[in-house]
Amino acid sequence: MTTNMAERSRTAETGHAVGSDDIIAGNVSKYTVLPVGYCGLPKKGHLIFDACFESGNLGRVDHITEFEYDLFIRPDTCNPRFRVWFNFTVENVKESQRVIFNVVNFSKTKSLYRDGMAPMVKSTSRPKWQRIPSKNVYYYRCPDHRKNYVMSFAFCFDREDDTYQFAYCYPYTYTRLQHYLDNLQRRNMDYFRRESLGLSVQKRQLDLLTITSPEDKTDLENSVMQKKIKIPKLSLNHVEEAGEVTDYGEEDVELRHSKRQDGRKQSEGTHKSIEAVVARLEKQNGMSLSNTSSPEEAFMESSEGMNNMDDAVVPRILYEELLRSYQQQQEEMRHIQQELERTRRQLVQQAKKLKEYGALVSEMKELRDLNRRLQDVLLLRLGSGPAIELEKVKPEPIEPEPEVQKTFSEEANTSTYYPAPVPVMDKYILENGKVHLGSGIWVDEEKWHQLQVTQGDSKYTKNLAVMIWGTDVLKNRSVTGVATKKKKDAVPKPPLSPHKLSIVRECLYDRIAQETVDETEIAQRLSKVNKYICEKIMDINKSCKNEERRESAKYNLQ
Image (tube, rainbow, N blue to C red; front, side, top):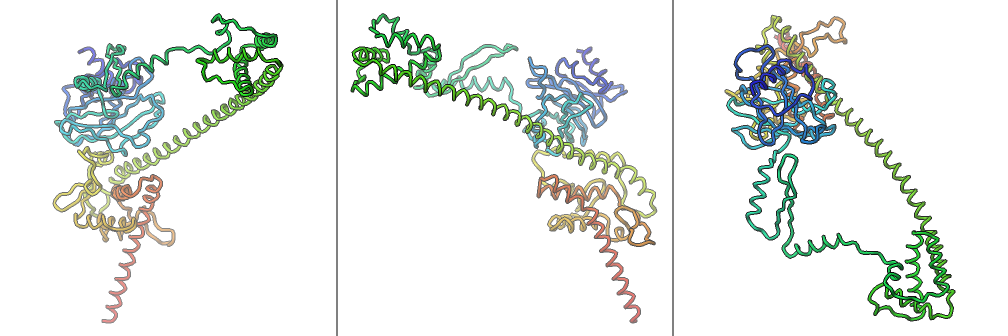
């Protein structure tokens, strides 16, 4: 056990340089992931992974950064190419610690994670399973991991003493199933029967359950036995072997010779045609076969009637007519089967083309979505890095900026783990009559509640900008910091804080997300944030100029 832990520690220190899931031997057991180059006892925040329990699956963990881990899952039993299920626990967490878990060796190309499904999570203090918010889950193909599909999800630990458990979906263990079946068997219900088919590869019992009404059990067994009995087909050879002597005439001998020459298919058709001839002759002569006990007896009686007939040419003519119609029908059936086969091949080709087209459309949609999210993250990071340093150089006092590390944590922040879904109004922190919007920005609680009932994106954005910056700051600033091209002697004004602009976008995004889930509509409405703020700055400057004109006019009158 010590040697195994040492090997895993060396694997974690090398990071993802190994880059292969071939070395996965078993589930991790109380495995502590340490940063590269760290020596000493684990501290709070050095995560401990464990999957050594029933239905657990996690074969390897690689430490990428302080906030990111690569997870490798083990394949199914007797199916090394199928890797989907995962179930593991995480402990020794730190409060407000944010992480990103990447399950890097999925085998499925299509998954419900693309359509809004999310992994399950629970903890010791909140034992009820619930889903991680779908906006924090990403499913994509990664070239760094053999072009395998990767499922990444972000999470924030909120209690240090809790042990968190993550799973692909709701786990249902083999032990739980056996307990349930044992409970049903102990009830001795008439309509329930449990039998053992055998053992699995891992020596586990395979159960066969029969659920039906008590009076149907005997009928069910009889129907099963009847399906296994092979009933012989009606044939002339069976009549001959029975030892019944029939005096065939010359015409009947010719019929039998012609049947042997035409082959097996014509023989089967001949049996049917002879039965049709018998029925026709019965209709003509007024014969009745109601007292016969079997088709063989009916055929024997009809053949005796044929021997007693004076004109034996009629059955021959009828037989040839029926034979010709049968051959024509066989030919038509052959043509129809050929046409069906040709149509089937065309449909298969069309289905393949539609499948390829659907895959291309889904990949294009996924790439566009990933590109948009990457642009948002890049803008947030660029806004919280160098731009903050530039604002610190400005002589004009602005609200105190947060530290770079705290800003990065806010950008990497996803959704804190709550015991129930939290609405947008309760997402932000309330303290002493103030609302914390993020990155150290606080606004008045009463004004914030008034803002939530504002109608229209334009009015909402303008009022939020006034709450964050104030009119005195907005009138001396611009959104981009570039001078307008309408005036030749225009002087560029200092730009607004990028991280505060990102807060405005996030607030507007939360508001829009409550109204629609269409990503295109959300992106289109978010793209107008700068335009709304520019209009607000122009309105403030216009009102200031009008106020100056009124003051000057009043002064002149005095």
